[in-house]
Image 1 (cartoon, one colour):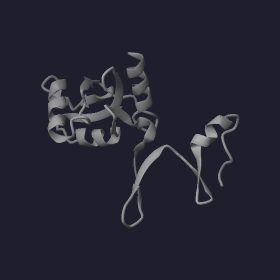
Image 2 (tube, rainbow, N blue to C red):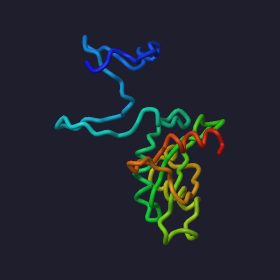
Image 3 (cartoon, rainbow, N blue to C red):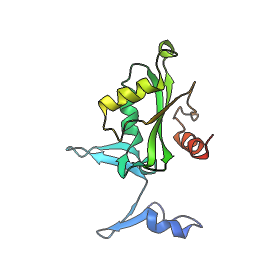
Length: 152
């Protein structure tokens, strides 16, 4: 066993630790799948899940599809508040240099609707010059999510 629980946060333990067949497991918050050979593949973080009209939308899946768009250089998908749907999908996109000014937000939305389920397709797109990144180069999706929620 690696740890007994959170120091000073015992209320978090029941959500984080689960017992299955007499063994104690840590819920990391990662979403993974296992292939037929027993290999694990990390898919996304559970906390990133977007609940759009009751449908579960995994940002990594939408991002993967959007990277197929010829104009998309980088993308981060976040959930935004929607009074009717609970949340809607929003894509924050950095365009490739040759596409700036010739690709619109609606172009990205229309392209997405042709290639994925309508509830997964971004309802909103915002173009950015760059996405914030950590020192290791990972996109800081939490920062972008919080900015969207606070209306910045």
